[in-house]
Length: 524
Ligand SMILES: Cc1cc2nc3c(=O)[nH]c(=O)nc-3n(C[C@H](O)[C@H](O)[C@H](O)COP(=O)(O)OP(=O)(O)OC[C@H]3O[C@@H](n4cnc5c(N)ncnc54)[C@H](O)[C@@H]3O)c2cc1C
Image (cartoon, rainbow, N blue to C red):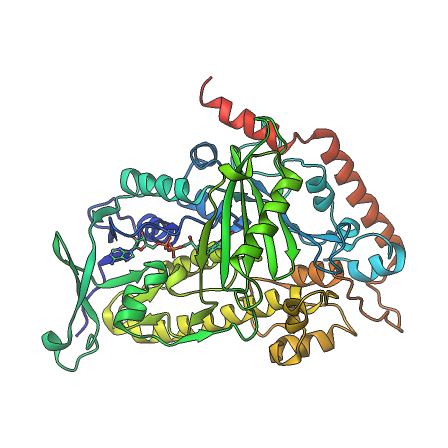
């Protein structure tokens, strides 16, 4: 059997479904008669999860690659610019305790050892301020570019904050109107397999079609399961094993709420603000028309009442909104991932493949990487499916584990012991082996690419450096001299960072002004 793969069915119309459909349809010319056929089906009964407002600079690349106009996207999705995550209260719990994890890597790292330059020459300055201008540009509430800067170009690297519901609708229109994606709205009730049809050939047990309530059977060669928590194909049909990582990262619930601005011209933060709480943390994301807030927590360490009290108090400190007018929403999730997201002719992408709490907003980035990998490695025939799937699965297990390591770092380095949550987070049995070894190594040296087994990491050495040193972890000073410890070059590097900062402070508009300028263009 050597049947060609010419039609793909994407199950689910949330962020994962539409992004994956867009990637496959664009890359494989679904709008052309000879292109791949891409169909997306979503249930009229089950809505998308509707959260997921923080993204990475990868999304900027993805949107450009699939032919989206950036300004149209910004206008349609209430989007704003995100340049960093700002962590407040993670180290000691003190209100002055904060640090940045910006998107720009440390400047000058190709020629000098910027980490040692910081330790030697500016040990009292926050690491992120010493090695990059971006954290201070964020602190000043500035945009990553000017109003005349072309779409997707930038002064400093950025991703977006966006309204998840509007984003899904925007991608849907783009997919259907411009990329040739066929759309079916129907509820899938069962799965039909190839078993009886093909005996023992390579499609044994593979999905033949999806039984839909109104429209009958929907056939395809490859099925992408973007059905979110339902895990319709990967879980309910294939029962792919799920690794629960609550033993390492405790958060499994969230309470989310939308908060209006006090005035229409209120500043919009250029970073996601993540403020540590006694049983988790609160995200604070500024969109054009409102803020999106949420307390992510471990339900073993607190109650919904306590969570709402903490959220109310956070809101009252940052807004004059009438608390009683707000409608908080409860969400729960199981932190973990599937070890075989690709089974037979089905690949899980998005929440159906796994989800670890949103601390570094890596879920949409994982969707982007998954869909790009599927698109790049799309098997030509069913025969090639098994080996492609095997490699895909191995790489994604590594990715999930590397996300878990990086997120755990934020908790492990904390000095907080004001609640059972923080104390439990420091218990040695919750520390993954690889992270334990790396932390030992990093007592003596700076994180480098050589420390990671492969180059697939979502979080590379710069991310580790920002969090390690932001949280006060300092490596030993080197005893011997290295050519990369060059005082003169370090001085020049600091001067260049200062010059970039001055240029940015002088020339960049505020996040709000740039968004006003972009949204006004439409009406000119
Ligand atoms: C509290 C919280 C905060 C988050 N914050 C972030 C963040 O800041 N950044 C980030 O990157 N990610 C974040 N995420 C994750 C992000 O929300 C998801 O990764 C993203 O929305 C993708 O979801 P999805 O498309 O996989 O699933 P969903 O949005 O749940 O979509 C599921 C789809 O499947 C369809 N479906 C289900 N059953 C059937 C059926 N029987 N027949 C037909 N269709 C069906 C539904 O109709 C729906 O369209 C967060 C998640 C949570 C829980």
